[in-house]
Amino acid sequence: MSAPQILMQRGLDRPGESHRLEAYEAVGGYRAIRKALSMSSEAIVEEVKKSGLRGRGGAGFPTGTKWSFIPRGSESPTYLICNSDESEPGTFKDRWLLENDPHAVLEGMMIAAVAIDCHLMFNYFRGEFSYPLARWRAAVDEAYAKGYLGKGIFGSDHDLEVVTHYGAGAYIAGEETGMIESLEGKKAQPRNKPPFPAVEGLFRSPTVINNTETLATVPWIVEHGADAYAQYGTEKSRGTKLWSCSGPIARPGVYELEMGYDLMQFLEDDLGGMLDGVGLKGIIPGGSSVPVLTPDECRGAKLDYEGLRERGSLVGSGGFIVIGDNVSAVDCLLNLAHFYAHESCGQCTPCREGCGWIEQLVDKILLGRGTEADLAMILRISDLMAGKTICALADAMAWPAVAFIKKYPDDFAALCAGPVDMDALAAEVGKRDHILPRAS
Ligand SMILES: Cc1cc2nc3c(=O)[nH]c(=O)nc-3n(C[C@H](O)[C@H](O)[C@H](O)COP(=O)(O)O)c2cc1C
Ligand code: SF4
Image (cartoon, rainbow, N blue to C red):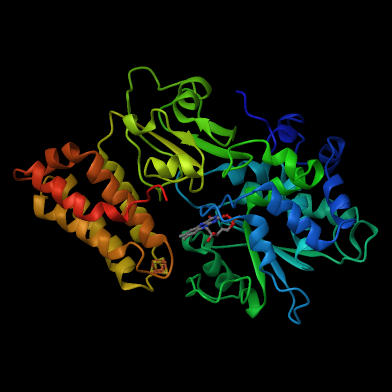
């Protein structure tokens, strides 16, 4: 693999002990925070801005720009939250970082805290993350024991405390304002925006929320400089990205790739191709919320923000789900619909009702009782959901629904009880596929 190892190498260089502070420092850990403490907070923000780092939690928002929204000299305290909820189906790269390199996450949080003048930061874990949580807690204990957290970190006048919080296993707690509600002791129901968290977040104070991978990337950027980071990747998608890969492939697992890497080269060379006897039906490149790509769409696709959008999908959370040709698209969609119907927080009618209706209609089709009208209904409901709710969970259901029917109409028609007019179905898809992501 030609990709540079910005995020994984330090962990891979010290197998079995990579989670320990001593091993982390032996490969240069905690140098970057010392450097950051010698810089002004504005200079740190500028360096991260210049690096081109974009958030790895799904939306790809520029990290330095997000930090720059925090008002300077605010009377209220400023908070930092690391989003370690990682509940997106097919996504397990933050888990790798927390288990194998928790100090990199912690150091990234420290640097972000210094950059936004924060003295109390939080790491929010999904409820099921017991092993990563244990590794994280041990890392925090080591850092406190060494005096790296608490009063005057690294001999500076910056006091910094960290709170570890774990949720109850709700996907919606990963949405940033749902997470804030949960940290405040309420149900994790997303808030209407604006105000955005940078203005009014946790306890109504300015708050930055970043994904675990985003924060774990920051020490490398501060240590080596924005220019060194920006030389990797493409013009608009800088650096490297973790991809968690699953499905009927020879070598599933977590991989770090330079942005812009060729998708088929990744599948065939690095992942070892499909398992014997299984053909490629499609790939969901960015976790269950993003549209599936057919083999034709995969050929020539580049794994970066613009490259995947150009093909009608997204980088999302980097959950690279390979689907074999021995699986029906109807089964895939039912699996996703069941998840989203279960995880909808219920505040918005289009999402609460829509996810449940789509689940029931797909189930009906899978049982051989569906009709062409049911397919048209799924498409119509999806159109009524996308972009019309408080958070993007509704889109996360609508996009895969439209994409699966659009790209695998034969699978759906084959299971319907009556005949399906494929031209009429294609026309129905055409009326609804404006909701899918496309090149901007
Ligand atoms: C339903 C839903 C679930 C989400 N789950 C996660 C998650 O598990 N982890 C995460 O980092 N971001 C998740 N996000 C995105 C966050 O709202 C937020 O954009 C992200 O944490 C910001 O960090 P970043 O800028 O570093 O990407 C989710 C968004 C939605 C709508
Ligand atoms: S879109 Fe769904 S999950 Fe998001 S706030 Fe509305 S009901 Fe809740």
